[in-house]
Picture: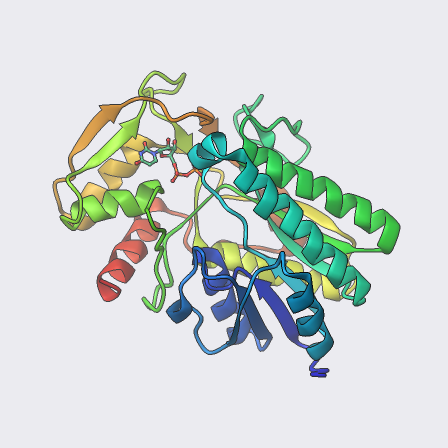
Length: 328
Ligand code: UDP
């Protein structure tokens, strides 16, 4: 049994956010251990940490991992994240995001691990009732992805009551960008996220980008999102981890910048940053999309002393662009 007091289990640590989190944890002196089934993640994205290839639904494997390590905390980044796919194949989302997470929670609690950091999402709010969303906004997800995350949030709160689980639920808006040193980048296969798609178009790897609808009630008719730099997102997790392990009570925070950009604005900024002509064609709306999702992240800033280092979209896109070249 490893009794190192700084071991952190990072489930989904070979994925986009999880792999950046591993870098942040290492830099802060923690010892991340990655569990990832590599269904979406990449083996080479796990830099300088142990990778256990397996699934969080596998109770026998989890028993074995928890008997080997005494983890200080578990961080969970292993959810499926595509709104459109979740509408077409909801069972995948309820199986992986809910049922497998229940298995993880059950086994970590049995093993006496009390601190849990969960990647949640702005999608739990559904259609916003205000310009910037605070954590007290009603929870009314409008697609199976959002509902799967909401269900896990509710389970976590129940385990806090029954078993003293100490949690940080972090509701991300749109994670974007890449490690400024270019060690990692965003790689989903097939790619469905706006910024990597736009940059692939700039790099000539695809014809252009299809904009999913221009009849939303926004200034230019396209959807507005709050893009947050992956490094800032991970830094907030680190602060949440420290707070939890230093005795702060459970927490729920939005993580975003508070600034919204429309799809057309993202394409324009990417044209400027890359100096390339990116072709954009108007297409049909994507099922399950909210018109506007912008965070009020004041609470995380205030309570965690979180100060985002890269709040502007230009830097986010520049880092993503640089990293894409290093990894192509
Ligand atoms: N989007 C788009 N074309 C694409 C991919 C995404 O117009 O090829 C839009 C999408 O409808 C949403 C925004 O870009 O309004 C961000 O989508 P993404 O999938 O990156 O993140 P999500 O908001 O779904 O988490």
